[in-house]
Structure formats: C-alpha cells, structure tokens
Length: 355
Image 1 (cartoon, one colour):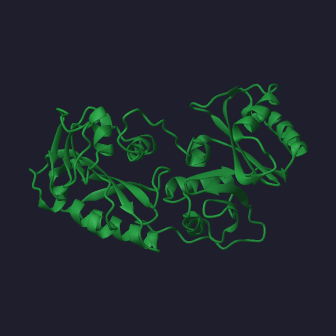
Image 2 (image 1 turned 135 degrees about the horizontal axis):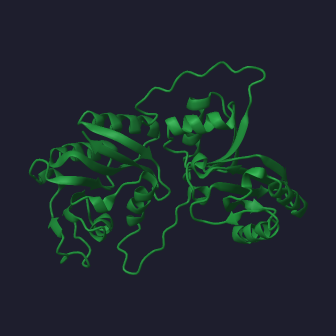
Image 3 (image 1 turned 60 degrees about the vertical axis):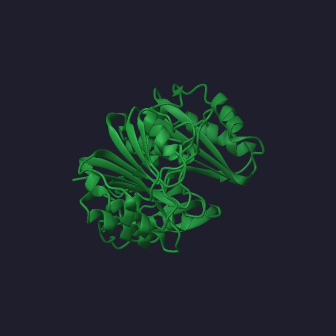
C-alpha cells in the first residue's frame, strides 16, 4: 500500500540518545523536495543537504538502518527513487580514496559475496575522470577482498558518491537501496526503428513492479499514438486495441495483432470484461485522464491489470496523486504501486489490479 492511501503512524518522540543514520537520496530532477517530504512523513524531522539541486541530497534520519529499511518496505515511496547508506565519509582526494579502499577491504559482510560496486559523482568533483574509471580504480585496490564483483544479482552493493571535495560510501543489500541499479537509473538501449522512448516506461515498469506482460492476452491502449507502448505489448505477444484519433506509426499499421480505432477515448464502446490489460500514457490533465480511463474500466476483466501515467502539472503533486488514486479506488481498482520511475519525467506511474 502506498503512503497516499494509508495513514502513516505517528512518530515516536525523539530522545537524546536516538540513533541516527545517513543516506544519499536521489529523485528525478526537480522532485527532491517531495522525496524529502516522504522521508519527513515517515521519520519525523529530516536534516538534509542538497548535493545536486532538485535531485540528490544527503539526509540524516532519526532511525537505525534496519528501521529505515523496514519502514520504506512497508511504505514504498513515490518520489524517492534511490537511497544509499553513508557508512564512510572523508574529504576528497586520492588519500581519501586509499582510506576508502582499506575500509572496504576489511568489511566482513563482503567476504565471499557477489558484490556490485556502484560509483557516481556530482556535477563538480575532486575526481576529474569518469565514474567508470573511479570504479575500476577502486576495484583494482580490492583484489585482496574475497568477493565476486558483478553487475547482475549482487548480494551486497558498495555505493560510492564523489561530490565536490567530499567522498561518501556505504554497504547495503540491493533491496535496501530501493533499486539495484546505480542511483536507480535503469538504462535501456535504444533499438533500431524504435518508435519512441515512451517504450522505456513500460520496460522499466515490467522490471520495477514485476508485471508479467507476456502472460496477458488482450490489451487496450488508450491514447496510443504514435505507438511506443503498443509496440512493446505486441512484442510481448499480446493482441492490442489502440485508441487515438492521431495516426499510429506506419510500422504498426499492418500488424496482425493490432486493431486501431481512430477515435477519442470517450467515443468508443467495448464488451464488458473484454480486456485483461489496460494501459494509458496520455499527455492530459490528471483528472481528465482518470475520468476517461475509469469510464472504460467496465471493459477490464476482474483480476485485470491497469498501468497508467499521471501527469503532474500542478505545484501540489502529492495532493493530485491522492485525488487520482481515490478516483481509481472508487472504481474497484486496487493500487499495487505508485512510483515515479526513472523514465518518467513530470509524471508518475500507477500499477493497479481490478477486483
């Protein structure tokens, strides 16, 4: 359940000896204030320092690391994309990097484990070369560590952030970082002939939410043109009905699994329970989008899945999200996740199941 549909328990009064923990926190550009607000709602007062304006900040939370992981697991954040612990901090420079290498080489939790070494740097950094070169530099100095360095399925993550004249690092499990990707930045390679980058949103949703798109049969794509999401669903083997008055991409028009309706979404009619998947990625106001989609939910079978993006056009995105979620919940939709994905811009993605 997300934080906008379930009340967060009130905070315990902080005591003088309350343990604190520190994290490098990341949100999509411009949404760091809302990620800070999510942390404040969960943990009370949050001391934070901006490292990259609107995107990356250093936060001190009045909670032990285990409590931070537990609460973030119970209340998955919408805007906080990635969080990494700060167990080591030093001034910038090669001597600090050497001290970090010694620190990491002595960490018992890394011994015998599959380890991912993830490195990022701020817009200005004492390390002038690329993050990849810093990763190679560090890994070469960790040869004595009995660990297997990998990108896929690590058991532990070493996170390093080189910013200005400061160096931050921490060790965690991938699930405690909210994303196993470096900084929560899920990268996909653009394919030849790809219709649009909008396709990356569904690809990320597939990984982030664990949606088994290939298991669906019949999908409705509302506001489908030019066809980025439609092309993804066709590739997964679904039959797709695409609704949009604008033209679909020419590469899709003769696809045997595609039915194109060049109409506005408010003008179409379908059979009840005709589809087991409904998707919508329209650049409309949130309320108009929700009104159109809820008006077509009769065509989604019980147990069916809906994936929609909610454009955040106003200055109070948390209130907008709460209102849109209430509209969908009033139509027998159970919210599985509400999250601003890396490939979302000024929007979030809702993953819902009809009951």
